[in-house]
Length: 428
Image 1 (cartoon, rainbow, N blue to C red):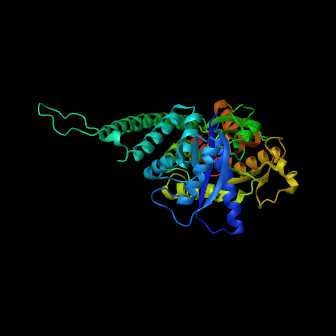
Image 2: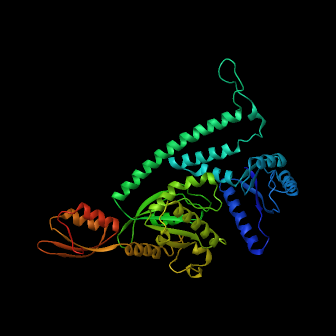
Image 3: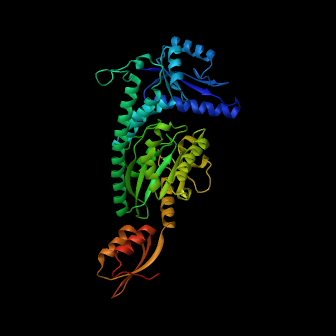
């Protein structure tokens, strides 16, 4: 049992709204620490007048924290901020225990939860890049020199240079492996396009209830717990909507504020699924006191994707906002929702029929109504339209079958290319 303290250095003014924001941020950090089995003995917000280059915290705050560490037998202190290598080392000396920052904490969580090949590689890569940034000339054992090459020897290389070189070599190998995994994922995505069911991606702040909603809609058993980052790897399942239309539902990793820069690339796999999605379900925890700030964090990440070209600039037109955990607020009627948002409780199933209907309606709105004349003998073309579209009307004649069908633009183009001979589009 590892006893831990969670400390949030807070530089913002001590106003009422900022105090609430600080408490919410501290509780998030406590949740992160608890999610990997740490026992939280002490938690506190420490106001900073200025960031000290040596320790980040003021000298009085460090002394007070040291007394708490000794009195409560705390073995690890988590500073919910980014520490420089020097600050981390000085704090460990002053407190007499292990000190980790927000980046190291999230890296530990990702390392414990990653299940797929790509997830594991991304986490290892992030760990190595973080470790490389910690290799500074403040540890004396890293100054030892190894012998040089040749008969005369020479100054050789210091241990720090050797360690940095080994980490660099491993990073190069990992990036090569990741590119291979991404190419494989790209082939799988192309295969899905050839059997083109619409993709609906779940996104949202961590612990918003995405995996619980995924399980409720698909009947799957994806790991879902009331903890941060319960799911790290993308999971996809097929479901059928009330209209009979088949879709693919994709669960993704949760977003979080101040994500470590080393881990931004680790989101690439799930972000690619979001970029390819026909509909994006933005799942929010309506019961959380900082739900509006969490919404802003998610939108900021998606806007960044749009600016980098990862996702289409009009991505917001594909979003359905889903306000989850209505059961914690006394029911759906007690949740104030903006127009177009769907209020649900994934844990009780309340509101899920409305959500499925909204997905159906959004997909229908994006589809085109096309009138085809198909030869009676061309059963393959008719079967394709039933499988990939929504047949609204069918009229059988002696020499032809007239069909009015709703199709997505991509499916229409695919059908007309595959069945150019014999099938006539009467809308042309």
